[in-house]
Length: 311
Image 1 (spheres, rainbow, N blue to C red):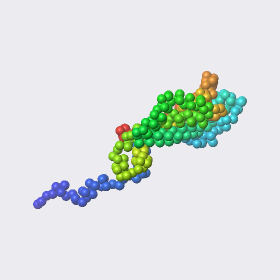
Image 2: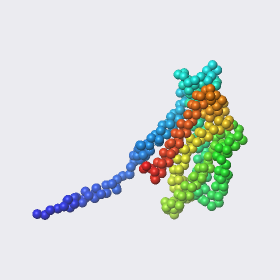
Image 3: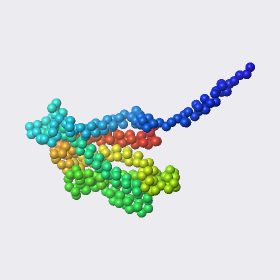
Image 4: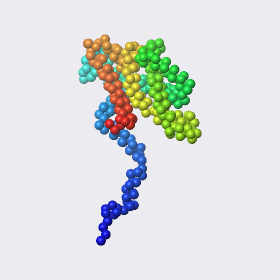
């Protein structure tokens, strides 16, 4: 009587199907990739969750704050000056009797608007100059990078103060000043990434197939060099809000009666000992907003870095 081992009794067709089933599986859909990415970003990462929560709260405030504010943030109320926090005024009132909560809620839109405009201008200029410099090299690289070095030679905030002071105190000039000092950092960042990407095999293959420089730069090089820019933008939103508040604090940014947070802190410093709420709540709003963007920026940096993605 002939016996057969278990290995010999396996159907060869079923074995091949089992062997190649994983290799021939269809790639994940975009929705599945998004779900997997969200799980990697949020599950077990409570700092990322906290950062997203603070950003969502800030965005909600900036969009609906002026509408939901219980009082007019610009209308003085002489008989309500410097009232402590209460049910009618949860954050108290300022030196002109205006509700601090309403002014903090309205100031979020100003801070977000300035940061968005500044970073849009800075990223556009920085990506364009850095991409051209890194891709073409040679004399184009020398000219563009020496021009960039002129701005990087000065301390960030000192140069912003100098530009804003020479143009005059206003939010518009604050946008110009901050845009002028932010774009060189993006130019340097993008140039370094482009120098790395342009020598990779897929770029050389596309070049050998006759791709034009324009197509190489914008279709093959820039999309693969943009990840660090995304992380840097997330971090710089908080820093742009903080820089805007700093210029307003020294009188070069938003002017009264604007409810911008830096201007509010500047107005409140005289009453620091007698009315603690006047300076505390705008300061906390500024601190938590910057913290939220920094936490999300750190989380994105770890998420986009393959070396730390699984940690």
